[in-house]
Image 1 (cartoon, rainbow, N blue to C red):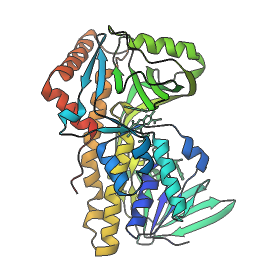
Image 2 (image 1 turned 30 degrees about the vertical axis):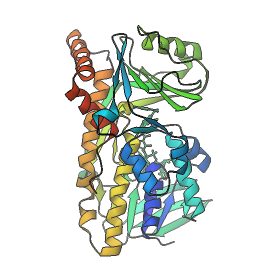
Image 3 (image 1 turned 120 degrees about the vertical axis):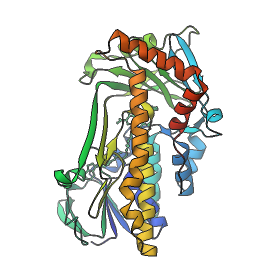
Image 4 (image 1 turned 135 degrees about the vertical axis):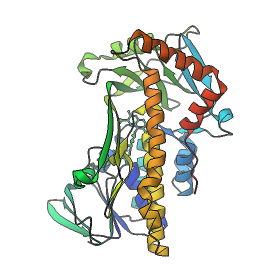
Length: 392
Ligand code: RFL
Ligand code: PHB
């Protein structure tokens, strides 16, 4: 097989990259280790920044999102038994976020790929990358028991944090920056109508909790837990009791209880590798960086990376220019580090930790009160939460 760009991974990064490249007249092949069914049902992120929504709409991928996505103009911070609204739209000259499940975005992109005959191989195994520092890189993989080879001009490593792409770069050529948090999130999906129109980020002495949603019938909830938490210790009744204890407030607001249809534990980590390129391999999305989910930035960063990469590749093929490809890593890292800082800030402020001293507890409460009451501080939060506008 031969293509211009071989893409490893069919998550948001890989699927959107292949779509944007097709629109730019650049050929690609996508290789995914999981089944289509698995990718379409993997429950993950839910918050799309304005720039992500605009990118999906401009690429013709927004039809169902416009119909089913929930546009939110604010979020709530709950602490000291009171809810404090951050008016995202008023604080950011009219910007907003859209709540639409990542797996729905993935379904929409897979449908578009299939409709346009985009080569997309699910259930591949043993993907390996070769000759990345030459101008003739190639990719080996197994599909339906047969060994295959793709010769290409470029490889896009869009295979997430645990993929093989980043590991194909010699250790001495990369620098990694990392922080592992001493807690995780237990997340559930429940068949219960959301009882608030906006997301509620709750700080309580018992730990953090988050109220989110997927549709007018489905609530998404998270609670801070131990990184090694055993789900078997969390029967449904215990989850609801703990959520209700953490969301307790003076106005009596609580999420509605419903059948729990999905449960999972998400570890919390910040990670960046620099540079995001090695020879003809470009890393995008979680393959290059991850953030704790408190800032809702992971999928949005994946979209931002491939937006930059697709334009740089189009400039190479159509205009014979490589300056955008050369600048890929530094262009992306500017946004990545802003999101890293914001996610770290939100995570530290909202999660009590077992090793917090009473002094640190007081600092966190002061920070929450400041963010909720100062126009300058809430504008800082709002501007980062809705995401930086694209400059191109
Ligand atoms: P993905 O989605 O992990 O996709 C990588 C794909 O590569 C495949 N793969 C391979 N394929 C071939 N060969 C190999 N050797 C392979 N190894 C792996 C995988 O099967 C997979 O299909 O990475 P991508 O595309 O970079 O997208 C990143 C996002 O998925 C991630 O950042 C977000 O989900 C993070 N995240 C959130 N991001 C947001 O923007 N807003 C949110 O509200 C938000 N909430 C969240 C989140 C992530 C969460 N979890 C579960 C980690 C909430 C949670 C709970
Ligand atoms: C979600 O709805 O899954 C979600 C929302 C906000 C976050 C993280 C996850 O910060």
